[in-house]
Every structure is written in structure tokens, then in C-alpha cells.
Image (tube, helix red, strand yellow):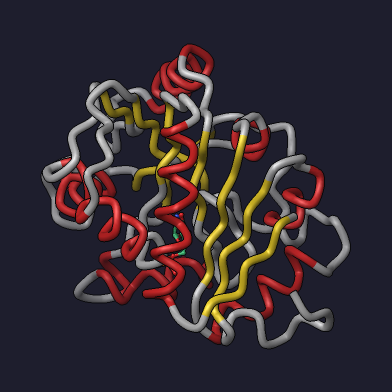
Length: 237
Ligand SMILES: N[C@@H]1[C@@H](O)[C@H](O)[C@@H](COP(=O)(O)O)O[C@@H]1O
């Protein structure tokens, strides 16, 4: 893993942007995208730039079950407002939170990923080490699946909703096996409340208890973290 430690999230956004630019310059056509507060500064840098994604495809990591795409809490809405409205892609894929048949939706999304192999995937990390919505204990063989969100994730994501009760209890998520197929990965983490997860991912045992530790087995991962998220690492990076 290449680990870049920056002062704060704003600086992390610039580093993340550079990785996107480099990938585009080198012919990347399919970008795996993430939501949450973490990638926001990277998207802001992209929006300010002259990078052009109009010939590119995006494939998002996850979406809540039961939430309409035009609902402000949906990941689709997040992507529109933070990136796609300003930087349109040729085509953008997200799981459909309102799919009538979740089993069919899972199959459809796996097909999307198979047909559009991801060149660069950006990831955040949950406080419990989840990536996408792959919670601790998730099998590493899974592709797209419906996840029962853990209490810790529901509590962490409640800040985006009016109350914890409004947080959906399930989500569609790209699986760990699909994430590992991306050619290059960036994982960003900012803030002290990510420090344990970051330590587990980089220095901890490679275990399903910390889903992000699977990235230790990927040949091309760039980790961009601020000093607070790096504060529990024993090695200097
Ligand atoms: N499914 C998302 C993840 O993709 C994200 O990385 C994580 C961290 O969120 P944040 O970046 O807001 O801390 O939480 C959510 O549950």
C-alpha cells in the first residue's frame, strides 16, 4: 500500500484529485465512485478542474434499499449534487434502491460491473472498517449483495438523516470480490474517529473482522489519510 499522510481533508482532496487526473491521463475509462463525507473534497477539486469525464463510465459502490433516486438521502442524489451535475459522465450506474426484486437487482448490478471493469475505485472507510457497505464478517467472495446494516453504521450515518430511525436498515453494496477486481484503488480517511479502522486496515491482521484489511492483498492501493486518521499507526509513513 502506498500511504500518503496529509494535514487535513482539504489537502487530502487535492491528493485524491491527482490520482483521478493521473488515471484519466493514462486512459482510464471506468471510475468506481463512493459517497459519504470523505470523498467530498476530492469531488470538489475535480469539479473545479478541467478534467473531462464525458467519455467515461462511473459505477457506484452502494445505495440504500427503499430510497428513491430523487430522495435527498439517496446516494444517487448525493452523486448528482456533488459531481455529476457539474461533471457529467457518458453513463453512470448505481444500484436501484427501489428495485422491486432485490435478487434480480443484485444480478443486474453484477453484470454492470462485469461489463465495465473498473480502472480506478475510490473508497471511504466506516468506523468499523467497512468498505462500500461490506460490514465486519462479510465473506470475501461476495459480489453485489443486500446488506443488513450494523447498529454502528446506522448510528454513524444518522447524521445525514433527521433521526436514527429514518436510516434505512439495508443497502445494496458492491462486494469485496468486486472491489478487489478494480485495477487501482484509492482509500481516503479523515478524522480521529477513523484511526482504529485505518490501523486495522494497514497494520492489523488481514481478517474479515476488518473488511478493509483485504486491501493488503491488492497490488495497487493508494491510501490518503490525514494526521488524525493516521494517529494510531505505529509506523511513520
Ligand atoms: N457506505 C458508505 C461508505 O461508502 C463510506 O465510506 C462510509 C464512511 O462514511 P463517511 O465518509 O461519511 O465517513 O460510510 C458509508 O456507510
